[in-house]
Image (tube, rainbow, N blue to C red; front, side, top):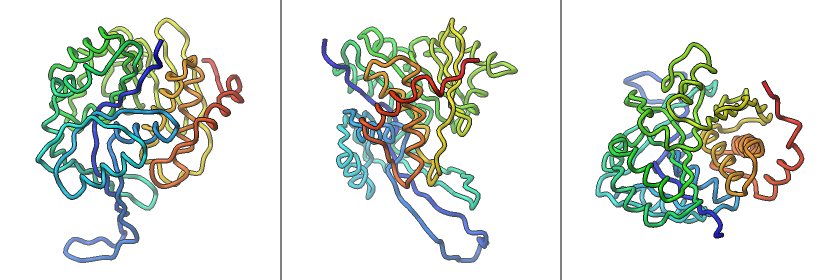
Length: 315
């Protein structure tokens, strides 16, 4: 049997990071300490980090036509990410991160070429490539507003071909939070505590997870930041996995790194508990430096082998 291949489907954009000055006053000019640029987008971040761990992802996204396009292509190439990209004459998408001294962030974004993405277009790129056992990871779905139309049918066709589908909710800037129609076609759902409040009804976390199970979810991975993460499998007891202590220099992309770590385990045929350990480890390593960092495959395997039983707490 051939080894599974990894496809990352979703957003690719330019991130701009600006530290807010306490002296900022409208009508005046003040000097900034720093202004940074980076490749961005949940799917793109996932792909870059996956490549750095030794996986061989293929990114399926859209690339606009502007001054950032050569930079984005070079970043993907340097990381070893293969691409299948729609081409647009519009500008690329931009996300501007406004960062306070305490580390809190606000994000302003403009979608530009994202508006041209549809399920039909992505399906045309991806479906001919997918075979039994391949993993297809969706990131930044809610950033691509027109991807929603026909998305359930798209996933249904992927499942018919034998693909394993992972899906990260991300934040919905349009605040529609549609998921019910395609939830049954997702094998592994990644969601943050805040996003869970929007996609599922209930007074407690457990009630909200059970709502997702009733609507078709099978496995839900709840990302809880510094508190770690929880694994919910339909019909089984939930498991809590402690966060790994790390001095955070940059938390941008930490959620994408977590997803990469989990999928790293899936690609190696590990049990879900080991996938969770891998996810927490890669996420912790990613925040230690600026940029999209990741540990080596050897380091991930060593960590999981050493910690398989010690950091799992059953509820």
